[in-house]
Length: 302
Ligand code: CAA
Ligand code: NAD
Image (tube, rainbow, N blue to C red; front, side, top):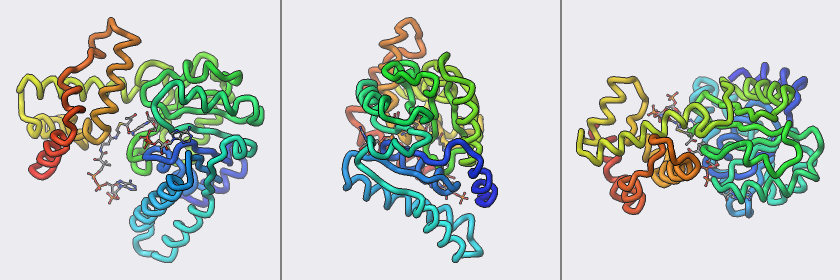
């Protein structure tokens, strides 16, 4: 972590104050890496109870990073954790905190009308310069931005789980995202230590457009009994160099998430066979304990 580099670069950067809306799995990771790279972060959640949980999760994750990066220098590790935490504040009042925000990044529930409600509530009150972004996995950035006037200052910023570990950030441009917004976001991606790729606003962007059909095809293989779950995963790890096999990855991402992504895309693009619904996946969702047991078995026996 090149802390000094990041912080001196930050004095010239356009994005210094970041508001992360949603402090769940993704939002807490995004807030963590923003703070540890020197940005001021405010996390907005529905209530204080969730915020307390988010804060605890971030603290634990920072300690994990410190243990690794400052292995030989525990005091510096402790400073890293406390300094990073000191840059994070929390709130339940989005309208208040956007006043001082260069970037509002939402990582709330994957639901278009809830995301609309959020952005609509701040479009008129946020400063003109403030950029809005969504971490959606599967919705169209243009459709989310449709309720806002600042379409030139709206983009997708798609992170990957686990955020502190996965090095990629997809920067998604709609036809209306301005060059200035795009360049500010690319500079921010670099400042938080991610490698950014640029992509258009198409279903699943780049990674999920490839990963979701891969996981779906693995589920179809499972249904047909072509190979055991363990062998499907071993095959993709040892034969294609993937860190996780598609069955374990599908469980990691969440079968319910995959199922709703596929069903949502099918509804919008019924002609694309890659997005055909999977009745077997629906069954896995309904019997989720069974799948988790199956994945435990894969992990134990790999
Ligand atoms: N915070 C901080 N550090 C973490 C961490 C966390 N939450 N989770 C793991 N790490 C660190 C560990 O400390 C470890 O560091 P060292 O190797 O330096 O000791 C390193 O990451 C690897 O972790 P582990 O040894 O525990 O486990 P692993 O080697 O099996 O790796 C993994 C775990 C990184 C998750 C790896 O299995 C992997 O890359 N899996 C694929 C993940 C993936 O594809 N994610 C994308 C999903 S799709 C998505 O997110 C988009 C969407 O829209 C749904
Ligand atoms: P999560 O359920 O872990 O967290 C969502 C959080 O948002 C919850 O803590 C909830 O209380 C909060 N929230 C809901 N409505 C809110 C509102 N109006 N204001 C403030 N907070 C609100 O979900 P997650 O897995 O972190 O996913 C969040 C977003 O990121 C989704 O759009 C998802 O598609 C996307 N995403 C998820 C992954 C993944 O692997 N889980 C990867 C990339 C992108």
